[in-house]
Length: 489
Image 1 (tube, rainbow, N blue to C red):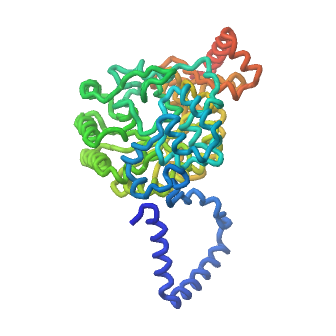
Image 2: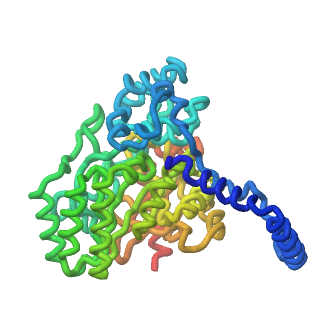
Image 3: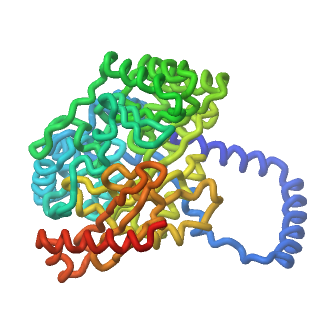
């Protein structure tokens, strides 16, 4: 049965069964109406507005046919993860070939300029390309995340650092960051099924660009062994994140190799395979049986050893979630695989209470647990995507209470300089005028202050002029730290 039509067909079957006994149906309806009448009298809440349930309405059917290049692509082809990978957009010429009838030449020229100056390689799956609103691509939240436009680029913040989180500085061996006492980040590889403009690891992920020469983290048995040896030598390490790059790009055998090696280490109690795959190419879960089976075996082996193995993914906007996503998440649910989500707050993508609430509710509908929402890191070449700490606080206030607490994400700042994730509200001092927010991380790096800087485009013209002056920059920074010291406990 078609993945795209399975649920509607089931609904039709249920309706036809109900109509097979008209007398019984009429009797049941009368009883139901009587019950509803009684309930409505005693109800303390008004009937729900249908529009508030819109998060359950998923895009279905052959939506990819809107793209001229995919007009004759069958469902079987579109669901094939190999077809998705082979036909991904990696340069302006491929973008032109796919959408040339949908956009003016000026759009493609703008995109070509954006490709040229992007710190990230560009790679967009046909699935994602098909979900963009090509009637208004400049404002589309998916286009904004994956296809850079030269006209939208703005200068980087003067305090920006290519590896702003200092992951390499906290790496005892290449590709393994040990920052938190009991957790380590294992970067198994440096490729992804798509490349996000906002990637915090633009220092390593993808191929070199005109603006960035990458650190190499290619798959290497020798490098992996060094990482595993280090983890085994540190009894305090209990939680390992397997990322990169993206775990989607690991072969099935490599998923089991990593999983088995980590599960065999006595002190490792938890591990998370991190992948953006479900948001950008859910077809892989449905059609790459070897990969999904390998992940399932690692999860089941971990469960027998009383160790937790889960999948962490990365939805940023409700438009990324379709009927195909639902089928993929249902498959993981049936296999007992827990899925959590980590989202990045981005200007023009999800920086409103309405959009973020819709995303959280839609993920919950598919049993994807909202875990974190990150205030956008200071990443080279994407200043136009960043939002302020104040924006995050405002949105969190509106999202909280919209659903169950365990499905409500924590909004965090990943403190520049290696302070780790800090609850967005937990600053020691925040000057909304200069855009400087100061955090401490006593359990990670005690005695240090970590500064996050709001994007300049959200500050007043007068303050932007101060940031242009190196002396004023240092004065504002010293003042913020001094005031944080007064508040620190």
